[in-house]
Image 1 (cartoon, rainbow, N blue to C red):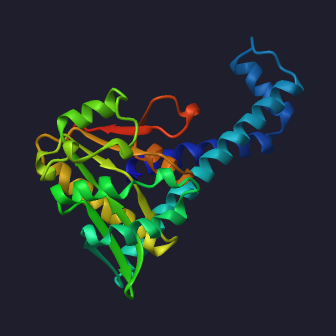
Image 2 (cartoon, helix red, strand yellow):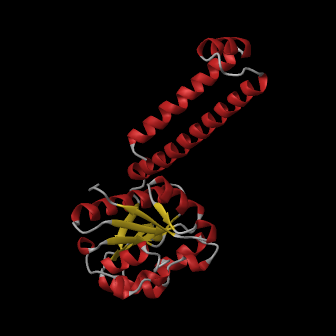
Image 3 (cartoon, rainbow, N blue to C red):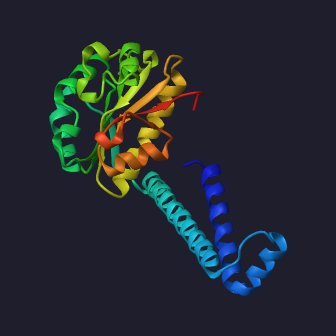
Length: 259
């Protein structure tokens, strides 16, 4: 979340909290007297007062909880950047696919939500920068794929003719992210804590670099297959393609300007 959005959310939440404190401090009689002077047409009764107080309390709770969640994500990424120097990011190759997918299988209840090896191999054969691996002390602690898509693949996803990364193949790949019309993120997997922060930092960096270097890139796609994925897609302004009540769907972020 950007500093501007975080600051705005904090300001609104704390303003509501302050208002709720004033309500509790003044008491119902004083509030009703004040409201009668401001809005004499408003009906005054205990139920209305309690409903308003409960509504304000709910809004404040949701706002504060959301702020704490975003701050915790930011803190993890900051700590990972400053303290996670022993986590090494590198590009993977086709020989690393099996190990990456075996590591990723622990993050999904349904194995069908993990991208298939054939699709990974097809994109890696076309573009060797598709796979990022993260190691600590020689042990794999995270990875993600980024698939550079041609125009036909991007249009297929937008029209829902392609409903999952499992349906992508070599015909949808381009050789360079600079020539891609879209990027598909099939899976992001990492151990909790510092490794997750490091992975997310590098993912944001890679996506920013690809967007800045390309004149053709218009879309970033992903598929929310678990709670963490859905949280990140919602947080970063992605929109779902299709009816989520029917199961996991592809999400898209339309790029209107350079990052």
